[in-house]
Every structure is written in structure tokens, then in C-alpha cells.
Image (cartoon, rainbow, N blue to C red; front, side):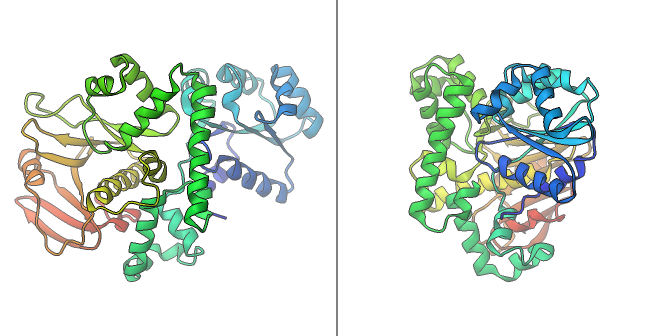
Amino acid sequence: MIKRKLYSELIDHLEHKEMSIIVGPRQAGKTTLMDLLKAHLDKSGERTLLLNLDIEWDRPHFESQAALLRKIELELGKRRGYVFIDEIQRKENAGLFLKGLFDLHLPYKFILSGSGSLELKQKIDESMVGRKRLFELSTVSFEEFVGYRTGDRYESKLLDFLEIEKERTMLLLMEYLQYGGYPRIVMATEHREKLQLMDEIYRSVLEKDIAYLLKLDKPDVFSALIRVLAGQIGQLLNYSELSSTLNVSFQTVKNYLWYARKIFLVEVMAPYARNVKKEISKSPVPYFWDLGLRNHALGLFGQIQSPSECGFVFENLIFLLLKEKLKYKAAKLNFWRTTDKAEVDFVIDTERTVTPVEAKHKHLRKTGVPASLRSFISKYQPENAYIINLSLRDTTRIDNTRVHFLPFHQLLGPTMAL
């Protein structure tokens, strides 16, 4: 099994009255996680019930709240128990349905999951304030991937392993950059099997999330948009250009991009700007939730070779690592561009500080600071700046700013001062 960090958070939340709702990309491992939680409770002697809206004979139980309660009482009685519901996004008006159940003050704890956040986040957020907690499960993170590949032998000293086993670390990094983190892909052993599985996952996303959940009238345009975005990670999005390339309206492009975000395919990062005359303030940049799916969209799955392509995917990985690092912090993750083309890959903006971060897929040998980063430092005088690279760990100073050179795996630890 692949150990998922979210598991312990969900275990801790089992004793809370709020509903636990797991959301994330299709086939990221939500059902497996629910099965593990159920097994944990069963082992502890708790009463549990698992229902799945993808299973035909379970669907009649969701025709009304009364029908569902009859089924639950049949299986668990009227005493404390745990009810697991998979694929809850298939229930229309899920938010109001769940709100009604919660407000009955039943003796049951509900744990739910669903692919795609369009229905879950939008309608459930509106209806269930104070009644639920959302847990986002991404595909397998780099940290979880390394844990699986090493049999979790170095779970308590992972940073030491990655620092000491440099050659193995580079091999693990390259494998992750090539194939990403879908659990079935991670566990497959041969390239051909991985390719077949990724093709199946990609089609599943398009057929189930796009056709069923979103009901888009131009699924071929959506697929084309994903391919275009895959070739533009970390680059400014031009909606007019995308509209022309895809031969659809400006608004259709914006709508489809919004859908791509809501089903956990793509995330967009907004610019950091305080001087709107000299800094880009509107155009976002895209990144993918999963590197393997991004590569598959371009026909590069398991075949990335050029330094420039590795650089783009490495930058996407740093985005994912930073996003995970800031998960429970009051901070925004942005990028910085100026009209004269100075740029910084990431800017971490908190109420107290602003911290620029550059990603370099290189074995740096010396502490050279790029001109664009110097420009940002000169303008904003941050306390710290970071250049995330493959191996160099060092610190230099520009005026009052400490510039830290960190190997990428240090982002898995508490190294950054935020």
C-alpha cells in the first residue's frame, strides 16, 4: 500500500461531528482511503456501512433522506455508527440533501468522497457551513512516492535519505517527473503497463467528468485546451490567443478553464503586482495537479528528455511542493512578471512577508543570483529569497536579503523561513 499523509488527518477527524468530505482528482485513491478508514473502524469494533453511488443497487437508497435512513437503520440500528458514501457528486442537490441529514442530529458520523469539486465544493459549501470539513486528496505526492519506493524504511528520516543517497534521489525524481503520481501508475512496474493505465485514466476523466458531470457540448475542444495548457505550464495565459487557437469564443475558453480547475486537472496562479503600470497584474499561469497526466496530454508520457522540457515539469513539481507546504498557512502563492520581462517563478505572500522563489532544474555549482531575482529583491527588499535547485545548499546575501540555495527535496522539511 502507498501510505497517504491525509489518512492520519482523517483518522483524527473521525471523532468530530462534522461530515468528513474527501475531494480530489478521479482515481487519486479516495475509495482506497475510505476502505482503509472503514477497516480501521471495523477492527476497533465500530459499526460501519459503505454505500457507493456508482453501484446500481445502492442508488435507490438515495432517492430521499427517509430512504437512506431506512437503509442505515437496517444495517447499523439507531446507535453510533459510521456511514461511508462514495461518489457523492452523483447525487443531485447533494448539499441540501446532506444538510438535511446533518440537522437531524443522527448518531452517525458521515464520511463521503467524490471526484470533481464542481458539485461538491460549490453546492456543499453553500449549504453546509459549519457542518463539514473538506479534505483534498491529490495524486501521490513526491514524498509519498519516495516512501512507497523505499518501503517506508526511511519514514522518520526521509530528508537524510534524499541527502545521502544522491544518485538514487535523482533517479526517483526523474521517474516522478516522467510518470507523476496516480496510484495505479506508481504501483505499475513496466512502462507499457503505465502507458496503458494512463490512457485509461485520461479517457476516464474525459468521459466521466467531462461528459457526465460537466455535460460540455464540445468535449473535443476541452481536450484540445488541456493539450495547449500542458504545453504552457508556467507561462502567461493569453485568452484571446487560446480563443483563436481553439476556434471558440473568449468566454468558452474561460468557462472550460474553470471546469478544468474544478475537476482537479489544472490550477492557475495569479500574478503578484503592486505597480500595475510596470508589473503584469491580470494574466495567470497554469500548472497541472499531476505531472504524468500533463505529459500524457502532450504525448511525452515517460519520454521527457530535453533539458527545457525537464525544466518546465520540474517547475510544476516545485509548484506542487510549495502548494502542499502552504496548505494550512495564511499565505498566497503567486508569480511575478514585469512589462520589461523580468520574472520570478513563485512569490509567497503572507500578511507579514513576501518571499520570492526560483526553480532551477540544474546542479548549481555557485551562488549566482539571476538578474530577475535581483530586480525583485531590489524592489521589495524581502528578508529571504530562495533558489530551489537539484543539489546546491548554500546562502549568500544581497543587501539585507538572505538568498538561500536549497536542493528541491528540502521543501519536504521545515527549512524555509515563512
